[in-house]
Structures are given as C-alpha cells and as structure tokens.
Image (tube, rainbow, N blue to C red; front, top):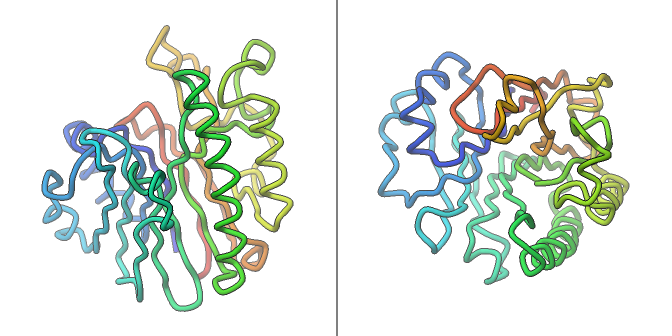
Length: 254
C-alpha cells in the first residue's frame, strides 16, 4: 500500500495546477491532505470519486484556512473527525481513518511563523497532540501519522541550519519535542530509509528557493514501532509542483 502525505496549500488551487491528473498517474492507495483551505461543498468530490477514492474532509471553521482530508481507495471501517479539543478542531487539524487494526491520520500542525502568540499555541498543540496520540495508542497501536508537522527535526532536514537556528520550525524546543515524540515509539519513515541530505518537502516562494533546492523537510509519514517490519520504502516526490510543498510517500504492508 502506498500512502502519500501532501500539503496542497489550497485544494482548489492545486487542482487548477493539475493535481487530479497527477493523482490519476501516481495512483496512491491513501492520500493525506493538509491545508485544503476549502469547505467540502467547494471541492469537486466527484472527480476524486471517478478515480476510485472515498473522500473525507475536516475543514476549519474559518473559510479559506487550514483543513485536512483523506482520500482512500479502500473504504475505512471508521472515520474520526478531530481530537475532541475545541480550539484545535475549530482549525481543522486532525482526521483519522481506521482500517481493521490499523489507523491512518492526516494532521496539520500549527505554524508559529506569525509571532509569539501562535508559537505558544503551536507548543501547546504539540504537547496536547502527543498526549492524545499516546492515549490513542493504548487501543490503536498500529498508527501511520502523516502530515505537515511544521518542524525540521535535524540539521540534515533544512538547507541552512545555522541561519535558521532561531526560526520557527527549527527552534531547539520544537526539535526537542520531535525527538521526544519519536522516542515514544514512532519512526520517521523517510529517514529510516534515506540517510543523505538535500531532501526537502517545502520551499519558500521567494528568491527561487525551489529551483535552487533551498528547502525544509517538514512533512512526514510517522509510523508506530509496531509497524516497522511492514515498511517497504519511503521517497519524496519533488517533481509534483501543485503547491509550495511536495508529496512524501510511504510504501507499507497493510
């Protein structure tokens, strides 16, 4: 099974740039989408259904902002919308689909780039998210948590670690959180397979950053330790250009 995570930075904008044609060619089994920036009635669901996908959407209350989705060729046994925490669910950040004893989650972690208030919100989210996941693992241990984490974990994951040392997304406390999260029993699937540098999933629109590969790796398919032996490969797909992010793919036996 191929699982892709993709921050599309607006599902309607991505569609206008050929996202559906790309999806038809790539044909992943499950797609976890972030920043859909649309309400379900604004999304051409029939075009995804024509490709054989069941579609699930959890938008933000605020229009044109945030929101996550899951496309799946197999109909899930159950879909859970949100974490049951109002201030986060209001922003449409968490969507879970259960397939037998395994679960796939599409998650969009907050950005802290707009200032101290949102950075504090992000750090509180990280703590609450981890607690929620650790509780979930007691009953659903087989997890794939795919999404935009808005954090580069290590220096290898960012093009200029020195200049960005004080930037949101590469702050010591954010990186420390990710280390702690992984130590709770999760695997960064891409780094499990790929050890070399210069692999990124997001590039600024400024100064030709993408053409120069001056990027950040902030999108992950995290896998619980219980599924380690199920993982087959992980790759980043930088040639997909429907967003300022690109997709990240995990092949796993489900």
